[in-house]
Image 1: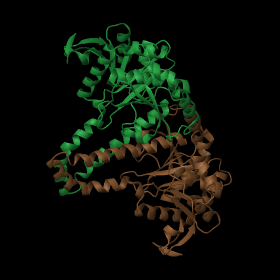
Image 2: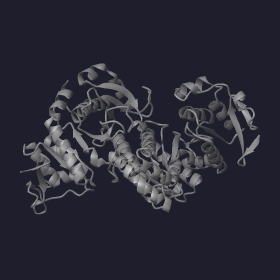
Image 3: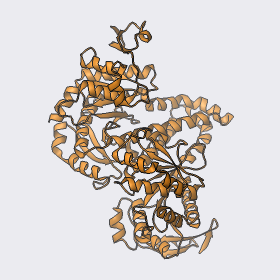
Length: 304
Length: 304
C-alpha cells in the first residue's frame, strides 16, 4: 500500500498490467466491455475488476470504489455486492453539474438507475440528494427542485404532479434540513436555481447526455472555426487560453463524476474518457464521501 | 393585403398598434400573457390574437398562423379552432434542431404537447415526423429514431421498450417511406444520427430546454470571457466574427420554430425573443408547409 496524494490507493485489475505501480493490487482477470449488458456481465464475470472492487469495499479492504468503465456494470456491482441501505427503496445515480459563478454544483438525480419511477421514489431521491449536497459540497440548507416542463405547480406528467405534492410537504423538508423550491425546467440546469434537481432516471439520463452532447458539439465547432481563416486562427490563439477555463469548468474531469446513492458503500463513476486528473479527483471525492459518512447519513435521512 | 417577401401577410392584434404597416389587419383586442395558463386563456380570451389568428386559418382567410407569444396558448388555439386531422390521436409539437455539417435539421417530437404518452402515440408521432422531415426539409427517406438511455433494443423505460417494438415493424416504415434506425441518446441530438427523433412530450421538452439552456450559458460565458484580459479581448475581436456563424446556426431565429403537427392547419411557434429575421423566417416556413399540403399529407400518413 502506497500513498497517492495523501490517500492509500488499491488497484483492482489484471496484475500483469498493474505491477510496477508500487500500489497494492487486488487481482481481477475479467473485463466488462463498455457496451456489455451490465446485469448479465456482473452476474457472469465474477472475477471482473468492478465486481472485485465492490467486494473490496464490502469486505473493508477499501472505503470506496472508483470506476471509469462500463457505468451500468459498476452500478450493478455496487448494488449487488454492497446491498441497499436499510429503508432505501431504489438507489439512484447522482450527477453534479457545474454552475458558472457558484462553487457548489447542482446535483441531478436519478441520472439513469431507474427508468420508471414512482412519486415516492422521487421523494426519497430528494432526501438522498440533500444529504449529498450537504456532505459532498457543503450546502447548508439545500434547495431541492423538481424537474418539469413548466414552473407552475400543475405542470408536467402525472408522475411529476404527484411528486410535487409529496415534495411540498414541509415535514420532510424540516427533517432533511432542505427546502423544496418547486419546479425547474431543462433550461435551469446550469443556472443557480437549485442545489438538487430530482427526476426519474430516464429523464435525468436524457438531460445529462443532452447537456454533454450540446457542450461537446459546441466545443468541437469552436475548435474547427479556429482554422476557418487566418484572422480566426490569430484570434483563437489569443482567446483560447481564457476559453480553457470555461472548458475546464464544464469538464467532467473536474466534477468527480457520478455517485450511486442509497447503497451500503461509496461508488463513484468517472467518464470512460477520464484522464489522470479526473481519476485523481474521483478518488478524492470518493474518499471524502466515505470519510464524511455519507452512507450513515443517508441511512438516517431515509429512516427519518 | 400587401406583399412581404413575396408573401401576403395578415396581421392579427390590436388595430391601433398595427395601423400604418400597410398590411391587412384582423383586429384582436385581448392579449394572452406569456405566463398565463394556455387552456384557460384560450377559452376565456376569445378576442385574443392567437384565437383570432387560428380562426383566420380555419375560415380560409390565411393559410397558416405564426405566433411568438405564449407557446401553449398558440397550440391550444390551433388545436381548438383547427381541430385534429382525422385519425390523429394526439397532435405533437415538432422542433427542428440544427445539425452542424448537414442542411436538414433533426426534428424532435413531441416537445411538449403531451406529457404522458402511450407507445401507439409515439408510433403516430413517428409517422407525422417523417412527413414533416420530407415536406419541410426535403429528406427523401427519413431516418426515424427513438429517444432512449442506451442504444440497445432493451434499454429505456417501459414506454420506450413498447414503442421500440411498434417502431421496429417494417410495415409502417414502408408505408411512411421512412426507416427506423433504433434508439438514440441525448448526446446524439446535434449529430447526424437521425432525421426524426421520437419521444414523449415531457422528455422532449426537457431535452429542448436543456439544449437551449446549455448553449445559452456557454454563449454568455464566452462573452464574459472576452473581457477577462486584454489578450482575451484582442483575441475575441478577431475570433468572434467566425464564432457568429456558429451562433447563428444554433439560433432559433434560423430554424423557423416549432410546428404543431396533427391539426387541420399550419401553426408555427417562434421564440418569444424572436427578432424580425426569425419572424420572417417563420412566416416563410409556415407558408411552405401550407403550400406543400402538409395537413393533407399527415392525414394520408395516419390513415395508412
